[in-house]
Image 1: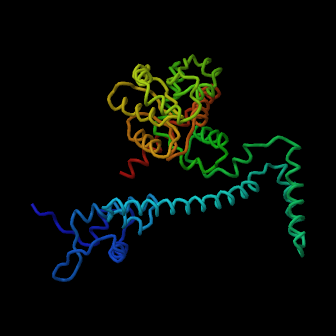
Image 2: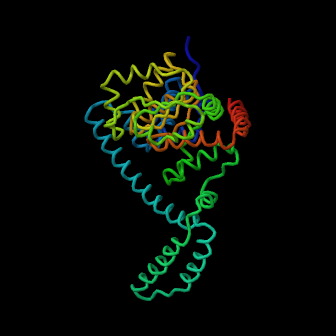
Image 3: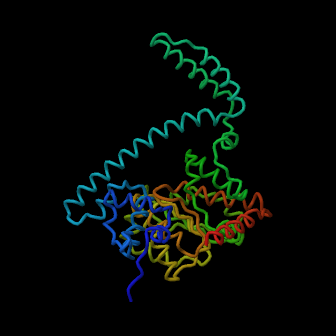
Amino acid sequence: MVSKLLTIKELADMVGGGITPRMVRHYHTVGLLPPAQRNDANYRLYTQADVQRLRLIVALKQQGFHLSHIRQLLETESEAAGSTLITQLQQQYQSVMQQLVRLRQTASALEGLLGRDRECLAIQAEALAQLRLLEIETKNGLGEIEKLMSGLDAKADAHPEEFQESLQRLLPDLSNRSEIEVDLLSKLVLACGDVSLVQFVRVSQGAIAAARNTLNAGCQIVGDVPAIVAAFDQTRLAHLGCRVKTLIDDPHITDAADAEQAFWHERIWKERLHQLESGCVLAIGYAPSVLMSVCAAIEQKLIQPALVIGMPIGFSHAPTAKRRLTRLNVPYLTIDGTLGGGLLAAVALNALAESLLEKPDCHCYLEADKLMELAVQLRV
């Protein structure tokens, strides 16, 4: 059976992702799409192969690849051509990193203004008023600015920093999140000092409910390495009756690279993973291979955790493991991409335990889950 040929509009509609006929024509012009078949009226016609190629182009573009690099990627066949492309991608990466550095510097300056608490704001307003009146006629004027700003900074030791006031000005709109989730996100931001982290945290539907139910039942808590277990709030977890266990129980593990190699080469740690109690909470903040093995064990029904806090560090395996986690039918907390770490994983667990003890009767998260479920249904 011959597949139906598609018009340019039908092609754009089938691919989706914001693609328009005009964009399709542009992709022909820059060589991303090969010349299309034509009917008797000279209109372009497309096959399923064209649909697949355009979907790949859209996916790569959404990942940040330049159109020129996408074209080379689709055309690369020889090892030499692949090496050239890798060099170009490295150059693009360095360029992006330089832009991020500049944006981070701008964000830091804005945070220095917006993050001031009420007392600091009064002092700052006075300093800014003086700054506007300052006349700079020589290079020495720059020193006057530094002196003015240094005087502002010197006032900071007059009182402790009011973190909650700063967060109210810096956090994005979280009105659609439950009170418990907002508290969780706030604590993660304070743990790393990066407000943009909020945009990368993923909390699955039902994750907070699952965490509260299983912690309240005195579940087993498992951290991947001793360093993350040491950061757990042992007092609150003991009050809840939770038992804490270390998966890779080697005191010499000091970083993600050590954890990765130890888990990969020592069979005992994989065997211990398969022996975890059903309904446990897993907090993984170091080794991506641990999270990958957890996902595989869940898929094979070898383990049944109540919640997975998957926040390992890594530049290739960690993002892959996190994406795999989000496709499983298990409650999870994770952070997209390479971001993560043992401290953040421990902070997430501690925040959930604290909120359960401080607000045992709070059910705001249930309403948030209903809204999330409705949003998913509407997208479908």
